[in-house]
Image 1 (cartoon, helix red, strand yellow):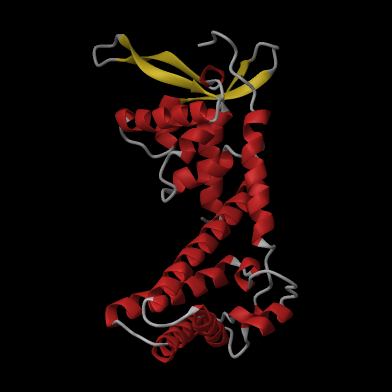
Image 2 (cartoon, helix red, strand yellow):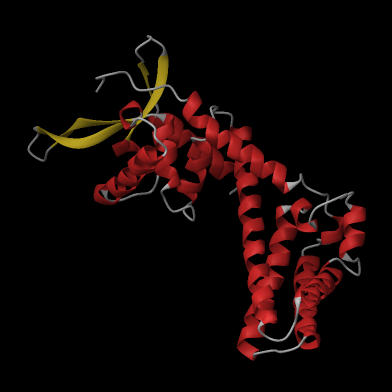
Length: 287
């Protein structure tokens, strides 16, 4: 998601934020579900109510008082004849909006943005953008973990043990990083402990994942057996990915290291746990 798109989404969410007074007469931000529905890309209210219901269930599961964050209200809308009729709506706190976004489809840009927008107690574009980048890196790393687990299963079923898997993965790194071994890359990036992929930037993690997914596909489709044949396949796929990057002027071994992904995971988890503590409650009876 590029910066102009992030700014566009931020402006849309900022625009529908409302300010009310809580029970201590402090100003707090709230959002109304009918307006949130539109900026989250839901065309039908009936579908959005399902997401709200899931968010309410999540709230209950977390043992948080639903009434502090979700308030059903009536919204008056004009009819074709010039009169008005009441329709269901909800007043929502930032925490409620966050839970709704968490229960949406993260493949939708609006939902992915909302998950970070409502997770942070800030409207600063640069902080929202930074968190989106962190989430993208975490998601990419998780996809690599998943594809490597699948590769491990595939090759175990085809006569290769755990040490063989390590050799295959290492030779794949050697091909991707232009002749540098996994250990040489760790030394180059100043990594003293942990997996190499935990310190790679998102682009390089994605490159490793693409090569691994290609290997999984061909191992399964061609029914490759034995360490030598699977190694040759994995090396070729990593070389192909390196070649693709090279066509765009990118050498993965020259990209700078990124922050230890475990630290990023802990920070994101801490932010998410703090949302409920930092979100003011709805005033009693306010509609």
